[in-house]
Length: 186
Image 1 (cartoon, rainbow, N blue to C red):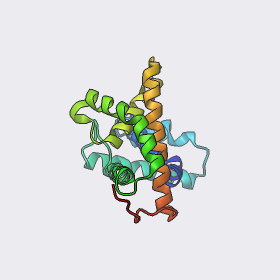
Image 2: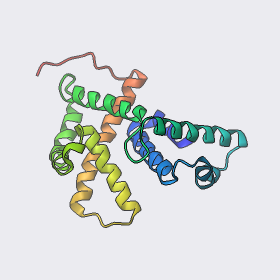
Image 3: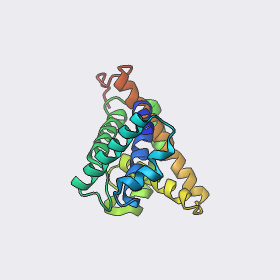
């Protein structure tokens, strides 16, 4: 909860990946709140009041996941909503706003994104969802101490760089430091 709140304020891309990890933690603990409390919540050195808030936060996530039919796979609607916002921003930065720095970073990652989407088939979703899926898959590979090729690491770096820039633009918009109202003609 504490980490999620900080990431949501500071880096929306890290927040989404973190929440995917939380979803998997909940699944791997079979939606058992007491088990999650023992393995996760109690590891934080915080007040009992804050620990109770954390437990309630996990309980709410468990309830949402079960209501949304996410017991085996999938992501919370709130997380998918952020992904949709980011994809819309991605498209705006490439077309309407024509953010040159973002466009250059996109061009560096475009072929890797297309290759990943081809490998994933129907489950790939849009380009931004695909970048998140690829980075989360890399996280899981590292967690399992699997070998990752240099080529894959390089592709993932381009995804990471693109999402970092996208998250930066997202937070600037949230703070009012960037607006999308100025259109440029193609």
